[in-house]
Image (cartoon, rainbow, N blue to C red; front, top):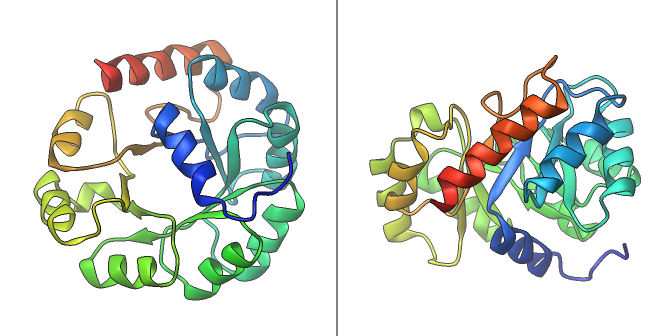
Length: 212
């Protein structure tokens, strides 16, 4: 798929399809095709392989090749060189646990979607000011729905707010009512050793609860 000049519409289209990010921490390249298929079949449009997984760039390259209409990239991206590596592997998405202006700038220069991690209004406004396409609210265990509501009251209404960390089908509703745009889903969706069928069942349950 050709890189768009402006990646924002790519993110908006994926969020419109299903604003849930599958975080596949610990995924191996061998598992990537079956796990990716289970997620895509369940309606997922955004997949992230954290860089502290085994051979993450190999998995990202495989997923990008097999699912060209899915927004695929890396999580736990900490520096500009890693952004370049993800881009070279075919990834179009950069997710970080923190706001690093250098990471955002490099992602924008390479026409990639970038979602830095923030936990405070100061970080949130700084990240948006640097050009971030949306905000990963992390760790969500530390950011209550009340905090999301307060952030939503002051941030631009179009800013995507995605709580990540400890999100389960049981706690999504409170965050959504507070103004969350979507969620990053980690170990409640995928954990090392889980079969593609187990991931498919978890994915379908998340989708059902989110849409229900």
